[in-house]
Image (cartoon, rainbow, N blue to C red; front, side):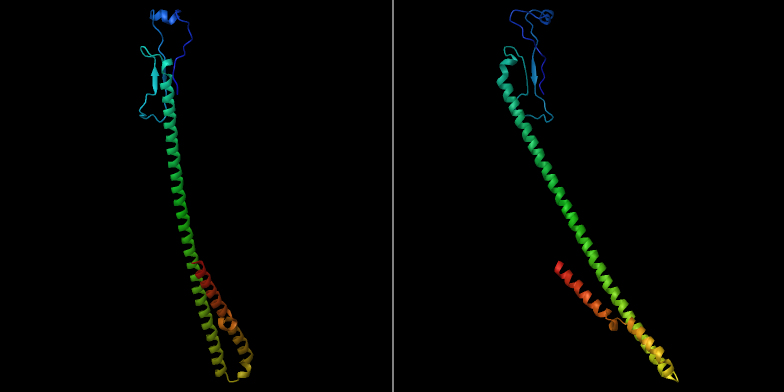
Length: 193
C-alpha cells in the first residue's frame, strides 16, 4: 500500500501558505511506504521519504526495485501457500480414501458374516426339519405296528408320510438347493478376494 500526502506542483520561488506558516525555505516532506500482510525482512527498504539532499522523486529507481522485490516476495509466499493448501487437500483426500476403504472392508466383513450365519441357520433348520420328518415316519410306523387293524389307519398313514416328505429337506429337494446355494456363495466370495 502506498502512503503519501499529496503535494501540488508549485513553481520555484513561490511559497505556499504552509511554507509561510512554517517559515521560509520549509517544504512538506513526502513519504512512500509499501506494506503487506506478510511483512518480512526482505533485505531492502520498503519505505522512502524526502531526505536532506535527496528528494523522493530522485529515489524512483530504488522505489521500483523495492516494489518489484516485494511483489516477487508476495508471489513466492502465495505459491508456498498454494502448495501447502494442495498438500493439505491431498492428505485429506488420502485420509478420506482410507476411511472409505476401511468402511467398505467392514461392510464386506459384515456381509460375509451375515451370509455365513444364514447358511448355518439354514443348515440347522434343514437338520431340524429332517429330524422332525423322521420322527413323523417313525411315529407312523409305530402306529401301524400297534394297531389291530392297519387297514383303518392306512389312509391317515399315507397323509402323515406325505406331510413328513413335505417337511424333509432331502425329499423335498431343499437340502440340495441349500448345498448348491452355499457352494455358489463360497465361489462368489473366492472370486471377490
